[in-house]
Image 1 (cartoon, helix red, strand yellow):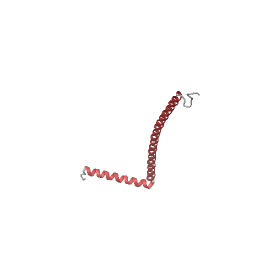
Image 2 (cartoon, rainbow, N blue to C red):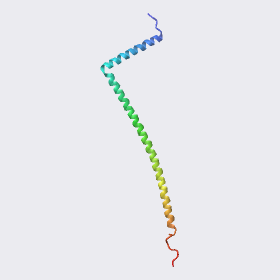
Image 3 (cartoon, rainbow, N blue to C red):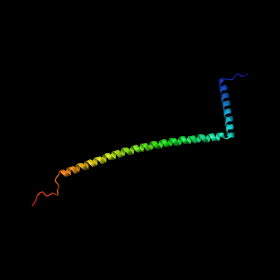
Length: 106
């Protein structure tokens, strides 16, 4: 009996595993299950990608929506300031005598 080094033993084990995997692959190819399994895995990967795309799109929409809401609040604030300025102008004008009222009666 030959003395086998540990490295040679590992190489033989790896070769044996590769041969078994190759034989199993050939058996699957003959039955057609391999193609089905591959297509199923590809479809699953597509579903995962679609789900990730959907989550990304939702996140983008939420970000845009939040930005628009902040803009609306800012515009509402500006509108409120304009209304207050107009109210003050109206109150000021009502407290002053009208330029069309006659001061001197003849």
